[in-house]
Image (cartoon, rainbow, N blue to C red):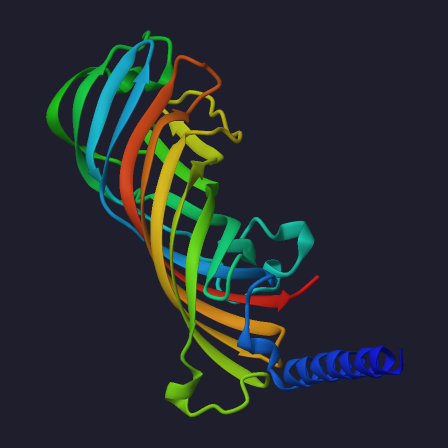
Length: 287
């Protein structure tokens, strides 16, 4: 009996010592050593560039395409609107909420709030037909167009923008790699540098502001198409929980159902490439 009790006590001490050793290892291990199970959220701003795009406009009395239309973004610059809840949609912003399902890979949902503005001071070729009733303002542009140059500084023909905005609602899968050793950083719980790459896919949910041939605009949110993207960036994490991240992001957008006027018969379609430069601030934590 005594031998059994002694054996039981020894096993108990061994178990306690094992747990204590494991606790010591956990205490010595840095918080930043593992990402699995962590959540993160970020908010930032962007600048965009767009490729030229062929844009087709269709309606009851018109069907024409603008070839190689140029467009640009609408930057706000450094401004309090980025953190003012009442005006956060005015600048170009990026929101992201993510989760690490292992130490290197995360999945996120996010919204890239971009702005797309047709360059008004341009001349582009137009092909198609316009046959509006003579009582309408836009009837001055009636005719058959066969690759005809049109000066769009005359705004009665067209103004066209996705400024509230070109909303890319997407999910991404990203990889993170700690490269702090390259910069000879010993304590990554104070500062950690990560390289990140990712791929995304999502829907376009723009609020399109268009005045075409003098018609009343639609100006409401509408699911208009899809997009896909790839990115690469640098993440610098401070004191385990706070980070700043810079990214370069490129993608493809295809919108075949853009609402342009209050008439459901009127629509536009286009496809183009975009390139974003993003700076975001965020936090990373375990629940």
